[in-house]
Each structure stands twice: as structure tokens, then as C-alpha cells.
Image (cartoon, rainbow, N blue to C red):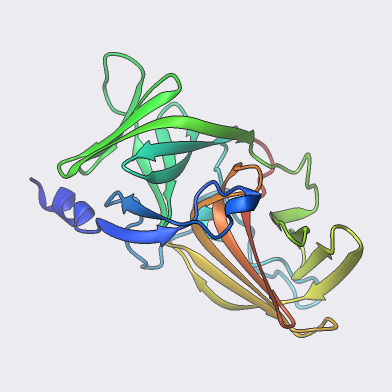
Length: 267
């Protein structure tokens, strides 16, 4: 077994999280077998080309901050949710025929295309994802996951969100939030569309790489706001639709959970 493969699979771990929850089972949790190599390293790396904006050009016209490439589909047309045995839920997208982006509960990795007799196969460092129609097998030296498609959705682009660089939403209470793609401001629509507020924010922390995380804070509204974004497989807790970023929104004394993604110019 190569040193690279061994390093990838040493990240095998058990985590508790809530996949594909129905309204009646929001508190349910299951044990997750995480594939090693699917959330490798927290070291800062260059942001993926085309997946973020530049920093401010002038003091008078601030630009939205750099966002990690792990928050974006990078040209993928749709996100696919996979339900696997042993219990784990994954999110994938294929930006092109040569690579697969894969999100687990802990982060994102990218696998290049590999030779296969039928279907589509992607592999890196002892980890492989082999898709045949609506089924897939994820393998390593430590075992395998047998998966099937649970749901899909088109990636969100500027056609739907023309002014946004990042979009997120959640339920109970229903809310949605968007980061302006040209300024350091965000808009929060909450209380099922009854309240709308715009905030100026600052970046409290930013970690790039496969386990990317960004924390934004604001004191410009009626109440303090903090938005915590983490790369990782996320599922709408009512519809089960897949997203690549987990979002925790703290507004005043309220804490809301949801999912989001970076908004790209085109698919």
C-alpha cells in the first residue's frame, strides 16, 4: 500500500450526523462510516480558479471576499445525493468528464477519471468511486460502500441568483440568505419571507482546502449576526436535496441550520 494511500485511509473515522431527515425525525442520527481521503487536510491552499472573487480593488468599492473552491460545483450541472450502506450519505458533481467532486460529512475531495470497462470510475490514492447508472460503489483497501441515488438538483447559478456569490437556506423557521458578489453585504430573508434585512459583514476567519470553513460576522443589524460555513455534504431537512456546504446562522439569540453553495456565473 503506497504512503499516499495509507495517509488517505488513516482519516477513516466515525461521526454522528443527521442525513435525509423528515420533519418527524429531525432529531434522528445515525453512525457514519467516513471514507478516508474525502476530507483531507486543513492546510490553506490556492482557491480553485474561477470559483471565487478577487479582493477589494479600492477602498470606495469593496468586493466580496475570496470563498474556498470547496464551496462550488466548479461548473458541474447538478448535485447528486447518494445513500450508502454501511450508513453514509454523500454528495457529488461532475464538472467535466475528467473529474468528480465528492463531499462527505467532513469535507470535499476531487477524484480524477480512471480507466473502467463500463460506467464511470474516478480514483485517487486508493479511493475509487465507480458509478453505473443510478448505483455506485465506493472502494478502498479498508472496505466499500454500496450506494444509490437518493435525489438530485440543478446547481444554483447567476441565472437564479444574479447578484449572489453564495446562497443558503433553511427551514423551521423558513429563511434564506445571499452574499452580494460585489460588496461585503448580505441579505437575510426570515420568518417565512415576512422579514428582510441587509447587513454589512466582515470575515472573522477563512480556512481554505478540502475542509474549508468561513465565518462571517456583522454588528450592523438590529441584532448581532454570525454565519458559519463549512464544506461538507448537506441535505435539506425537509426535501433531502443535496448541497456542498453546511450553514449555521446565529442571529441574536436564535440559531438556525441550513445548507448552501457558491454561486457560479455558468454551469
